[in-house]
Image 1 (tube, rainbow, N blue to C red):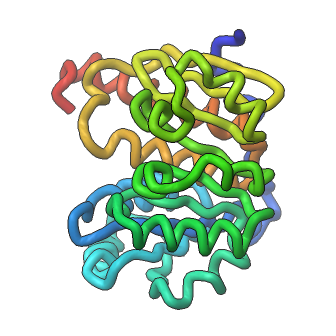
Image 2 (cartoon, helix red, strand yellow):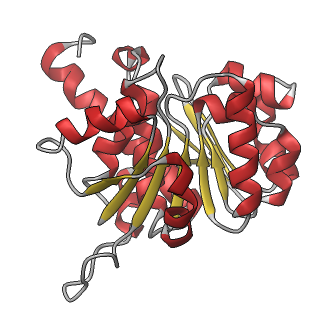
Length: 247
């Protein structure tokens, strides 16, 4: 199994000098709830630094919070949930869902949108990942899921050592998060050793999901996942050198 290194980052797409707005990625983020306000905003903040446009669809109170943060966030548009399909249509990737609650409504929303756009690139995290059924993955040819160990076991009913086999069986890219991250596609696997104990705090996974989804707008899914876990961990390591695990 290959180790992810800085060399892999050289394969990432770089915007062309003559490109114009919209050519370097459009991402839709669906997330946030009355219980989890910050999760989708972390994903939005990091993604807005990478792609040209982020369409952000949350509950009204979260949309208002995002609007107030516009000085800290690059281009994005707040989208009402009832209109989100129009924006998914023109997006390169859809991220679901940093901050959705683990309730039946989330399951229904996730299934509805996945099956409405089965050929779209998807990144599934948190609430959607915990509420979905594994068989849905077989209907989605371009999907990344980002479980930690317990989420992986809940979804597939096996320990994390089965990640390579499950990626092949369900035809998806799996990012198994942990002290060592594992990224597996149906064809290949890699592991990542950047990161430290300071990254156990809430929000780390949301930043990672936003980073991976943004990279996937213009890159291969496997490369996007590998680069995402490496960069997220590297940022944590640099902070660790400055302030220790309290960042």
